[in-house]
Image 1 (cartoon, rainbow, N blue to C red):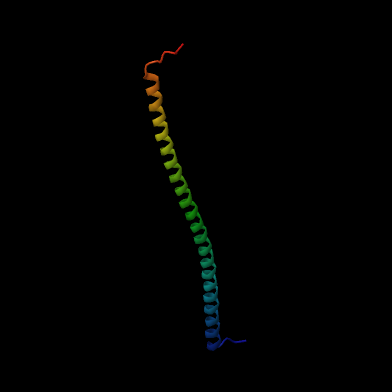
Image 2 (image 1 turned 90 degrees about the horizontal axis):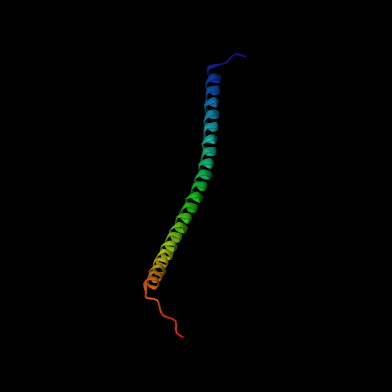
Length: 89
């Protein structure tokens, strides 16, 4: 079987079409992988934002507790430095 110029051109065209099809299929696969990765990143971002909000709320609660402790400490010091009361009777 002799290859004519037409056969060579046809074979070359089919080869290019096959490579292009495989290349496009690979791009679609990567698109799906990127979409999955982006979805996971979005989920992680949401978790990080929630953790940051929780940390901020915990920080505010701790600051409020420290203010109350300071008030209690101040009152304890007042009581400790006040003159002793003499018991009756």
